[in-house]
Length: 280
Image 1: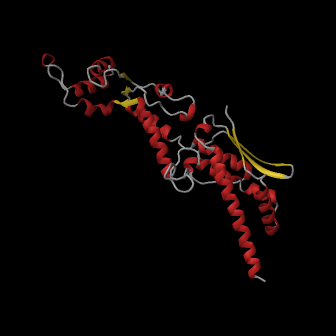
Image 2: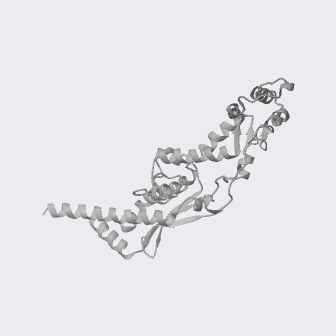
Image 3: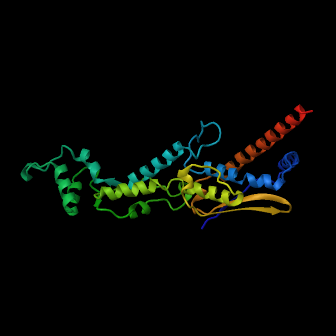
């Protein structure tokens, strides 16, 4: 099992100096300030984990990985992948329309014959019909295989991380209800990889970093802890989702978090100092 571990950059001299200043002003422990930010650190990691909206060359600001738009992108990718390997028999109607058997065989509408054979469970006859359709002749007709064909065409590693290969071959599924149920189930798993970071943040800081239910509903393998090493406290977050490294650029995510954390510290410090100055 892969274990991607991420630590906040609290050892930098400028970060420690800013934390000490804010701690003195708020009369809080420096390490407590760091611990309180663990859920936010987790949120950044989750937001940078695919699926992500506002991401790419023309995107401005940080990626958005917790919105309904990000969810829709993830669900669309799942449906697209499943569509590369399975074709519901109900979708063949438009493909077969207008096609008929030869005159010597009665000029019967092929779509009607195919539907009848599928309904009767005569897949061998349905298969023979498909063998005569250009572009579909090599596609096998099956009842349902519980997703085995889908799994066989998924990438095992590399940057694609579980996606279905673009050159995948389809199979025609006659039990459309089971295909729909399978697709619904897989779409419902979107957010599983992100969830590990949120759980890790909760373990380290005691609070959830976000409230998006499509992410927090999952029980993903994770580990989080707050540790004091040489008087300096740090949050340690680990995702134990085996493919997480294919879905996240953790370096850029933590750079964004560190920048934001420093800005928040400086802003809070300036606000307190301004109040003190105004009170004089």
